[in-house]
Structure formats: C-alpha cells, structure tokens
Length: 221
Length: 221
DNA sequence: GAGTGGCTGACAGATCGCTGACAAGGGCTC
DNA sequence: GAGCCCTTGTCAGCGATCTGTCAGCCACTC
Image (cartoon, rainbow over all chains, first blue to last red; front, top):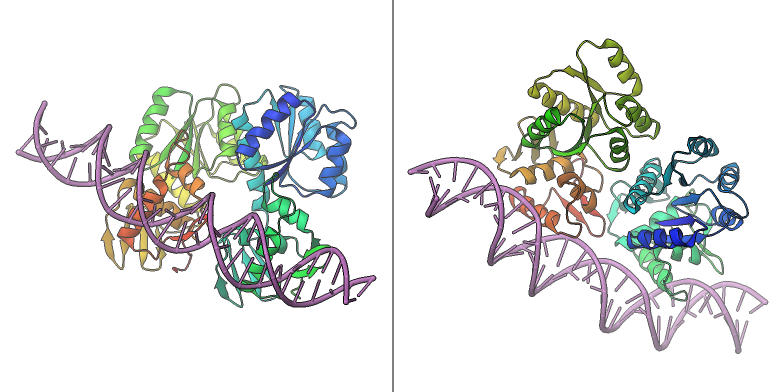
C-alpha cells in the first residue's frame, strides 16, 4: 500500500509518516502544492492524505486538478476542527473523507484503511487475460482452468500487472508497489520475481519491454 | 458475528449487550453519535443496532452518513413504539429493520439474525459446503450428517468463514470479528483456533493462503 | 562484436503457520 | 467450597516456504 502524504508542517508530517510506516504503508511525502500535484498526477497511490493549508498551490486546487485530470484515487483531507465550510468544499472538490485536526493517529490509520478497502471493493473480482484468470476475492490465479499456487509476493506482482494491463509498467513502479521505500535500488528482485512467475504461469502473459518495463496485454497476447 | 450496539442508556444497553454475548455475538458499544459513526465507518460489523435518541449526532444522521459513505451493513433501528414518522424516516435513511421499544430480547435476537442472514444472501439458515453443514439457527455444525461439537469460539470462526465462503479472509479480519477491540495484535490465537477446528472438522474445509489468510471454497473444495 | 539489460539457478537467512504443552479462568457437581 | 472438566489464550519449537542476493549467462542493440 503506497500512500502520498501532503503536509507542510514537519512536526505533524514526520509523526504521521512514522505511524503509517509502522502500520505497513509505504509513504511518499510532499511539502507543497506544486510537488503534490505532480506526484499525484504521475505516480500511483492507493490513497492520498491531503492537508489544505499549503504553500504554493492550496490543497483544494490540487484536488480539483487531479479530479479534472481523471485521477480517481481516494483522498483524505485534513482540516481544522469544525470548519464545516471547508469540509463541504472538500467534498465538492472530490474528497472521499475528511479528518478534523487535531486527530488521533489510530483514527487516521483506521480511516485510511477504510478508504482503501472501499475503493478496492469497487474493483471487479475476476480479471481474465488470455488463458489466465485472476480472482481477487479468492486471491488465486488459474491458467486454462488449472489453479496455480503463487507466493504472496508473486501474487502481488501478477495482480498489479493484470490490474494495469494494457500499459507498460516500469521496474521502478513495480519496486515501489511491492517494497518499502528504503529498499535497495539496484536490486534485481523484481526480475527474479518475474522469472518465477513466468515459470509458473507461462512466458506469454508478461512481456518484457526492454529498457522500459513489463507489459500485460489487455486482450491476452 | 461482530455487532455494533449504539445505545446511550446504560440500563438498556447493558442488558442487550449481555443477551447478545450470551447468544454468541461479539459486541462493540457506542454511547454517542460521533463515536458510533466513526466505528461504523472504520470497522467491520455483521450488523448495527442503532438507538435514535443520542447525544452528539442523532442516530438518523449517523445512518445517513454511513450510507453516503457506502457502508452497507444491515442496521436495526430501535424506536419509540408507534412513532410511525420516525420509522419512515429511518427506512428512508437506509435502515433495514426497526424494532419498537420496549421489546423482548428474543425478538431482538431473532430480527438481528434474520437481518444478518438476509445480508449474507442466505435465504435459509443452512449453509452447506462440501461435507460440512452449518445451521445458523441451531448454531450447530455437522460433517457427513454427524453432528460435531464445537466450542463457542470455534463455532464463530467456522460460521464467519462459511458465511464468507469464496473469498480470502485475513487473520486481521478474523481477529476483529472474534475478539473485542483491545485484543493483542500479534497473538496467534486465530492460528490455534483454526488448528482445533481442523482437528474436529477435517483439514479440507479451511484452506490456508499463506501470507494472506484463510479461504473456504464456495462449492466445497 | 562490444556493451548493456535482462534472465536464471543456487543459496541462505527470514518469515510464516502449525502443533503440543501448559495454565488461567469459569462453570458444574457433589 | 473442593474437585473436576471444558474452554481458550500463550508460548516455544519445528518445518516448510518464501524471497532477496549474487554470479554467471544470454539476448538484444548498435
């Protein structure tokens, strides 16, 4: 689970970041609106935590620009307690939830998880590509009807690639999805993982785009 | 079966809680609207029992906010007898059933079970998976027609897994369903429980998805 | 044919889930 | 109230699996 934390106050931001990482999230950080907008527009996040008072571009504008650009990730807004007007504006701008400051860390985590669960629940349970079927409810994969056992990490890889079928996914993006931030950059773990998956599912599903990344075709090869 | 009981009157609340726990439910309690809303939005409940007159945020507003946020758990409303207007409002707000005060405890339990069954998509009280049959009304389990004695906790585990057959249920989710909120996180109680159940019901029913959780197949292996 | 990027097999440390033993707590009987 | 049984969580140890690293190889590109 990779999330973007947009917060200019380091005292708050550092604390939140620490808690989320302890909770198993991979956290990216932005301290101003421009940077936040760019990251949200170019990277993939499971959710965004957005503080409204920001230098550069204010939070609501960032959110509106994301939504206008078709970004659909769930966004949790941090706002001053009782500021009802801000809340309404936030919802209008496309926020999924809001949390008044000050908040308890457990509450933030719980809400964040709820958001992610909800947005994940909208995805359909079955993705079929060629001879391969991914069942996200049973967390299983089958080829030509035969169930194939995948390890957790292997499953996550296949799941991510199949859910983003039809576009090239870079090794860096995969690394960021599958591992924590401090992960060794020039590891070939992803390559090894892809190799293991191909041995199990066949070499057709995941194609290599040399120099760019990996590709799963939408209609199955 | 984990339920949320929202009731500010401790005299009523304590009695209901005691009865439900005796009936095999795990009960979380809220005494005001804000807290109720938060819990309902972030935790998983099989059902909610909601009193309308609450301090903080009133019951109907809580319910509306849940529904607006996409929460679909069944909600049973407690209301003053004959207050037809309140009832209509409740149903409009997304309640699934209502029960006029004062009520008999047996009626509350029966309605609650009916609600949960209905929301699980089970027309009957029987769930049959492979050689195993779960009778939610008699709270009993049999394998190949032979009744098997399960302890309360074991029964809850089997019941939850069978009612969510066809999807992987994580250990965390099980922990949340079987234990109260403040339960030790890194206990292996669930693993032990699963082991005990397997010894009684056989190893076929509950599959382990290493790294993800447990799975009961829909059509029985 | 050189160079780069990607693939593969072997390996070992880490992690995960299962099990048996144990003890605390509750309820029942006598 | 003593003794017994049942339930249930804790703990330690075990075995299996998982997974990142590394070195060497292969294949594509220019």
